[in-house]
Length: 271
DNA sequence: AGTGCGGCCTGTCCGC
DNA sequence: TGCGGACAGGCCGCAC
Image: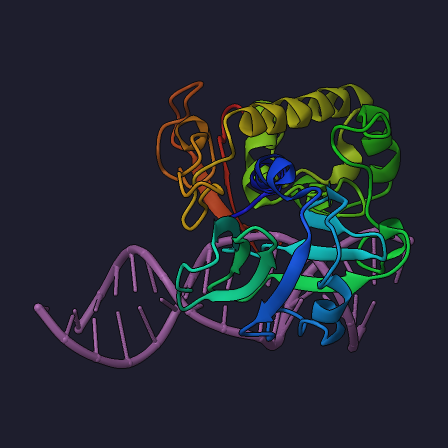
């Protein structure tokens, strides 16, 4: 499923092929995503050049002179550039036809994603305005996590997956980061020291950077914009490895549900 | 304010 | 082998 590294990989691959391109026609075959695609999206985009392709959390932000299309890939979505003549598959819900015969194709089998239109600064959009710092921004550091966690009794894993704390941390990377930082996922967020949060912040940045460098993980439905799978899967240490041996100490990893999300940890390494 | 939970979807996996 | 049902998963929006 597309997590932050997959979304960032998608952005980097698409940006040089989209920026400066004029959209000739937007074809919406299935508007029923998480929220309906707004009817005005097509008319706002058609005839305009894509001026930039940004990212905030897991939202891709395709901007024109007049506004921004927010695109979320949900759990199983993908964006690819195809030839305009290529017949769409069952779950290819939206095409942005580009002048010159190429086509940006949005596919989302489970329709957990979104494609929305927003005029004005993207940061002001209700879905983005309350997000916490990006993991790679200066505002994200151990001190931030420490201050925000004081008095909180919820599990640190739930805390990490709260978008107001840090933008774009999904289940896979919350599991991986806590494993690497040797922090038990069920530990109350408010009972972790400043030093440990410093290490955790560094670990989060490191894992995400490595995964982006490798082109994203390859879980289930994710494919890169060229159709190739990502390559980080081999390096996942915890996620989806319940009952398998810890890659650090050999103990059997434990699996459970924390904050309604499947969670894996090493009972020996993580405290 | 913090916390927990329901709900949206469908491909995949498991058991019969 | 085929079929049905449970499950996963991001994350908003609501209830407490």
